[in-house]
Amino acid sequence: MQFKIDQPGTFLKEKRKEAKFTLKEVSKHTDLSVGYISRIENGSSTPSLETLYKLSMILSFRIEDICSFEDITIHKNEPVALEDLFKAFSIKIGEEIVGDLEKFQMAKLLQVIHKMDWNDELNKMNQVSQILLLIDQIKRGDRKV
Image 1 (spheres, rainbow, N blue to C red):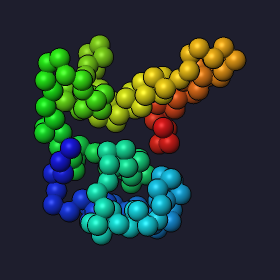
Image 2 (image 1 turned 90 degrees about the horizontal axis):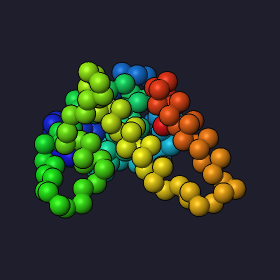
Image 3 (image 1 turned 180 degrees about the vertical axis):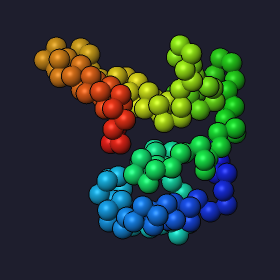
Image 4 (image 1 turned 120 degrees about the horizontal axis):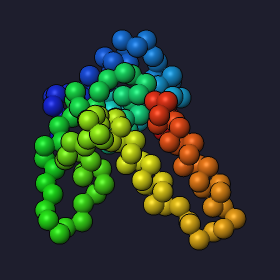
């Protein structure tokens, strides 16, 4: 992932100010520390894609407006991170092209499914319920997925 803009922290700070949020309010809604958000805004920390996703949900911006994923190279027969695969290709479901936010949510859902212990009979129903809840949150566009 590369940034399309020179100072992503400044962009994020402007978005926060436009939304009339304090650092503390953004922290509360994103589960990121006030200090970390401040370091991102002043340029001393670089946010991960997951952090950008959390911030984009509360500050209402599109990740693709500030990030470029053109630097991702996929070679045949080499393992590829799921996020890189989703970023590298446009995905179509039926006639509809899936947006970056939806691709990120699908990757998160697949990670949850992958980490589940399907051999634990006692927790199997709980795990399925957790997946269904996550799917419901994605369908509703819940900002806390």
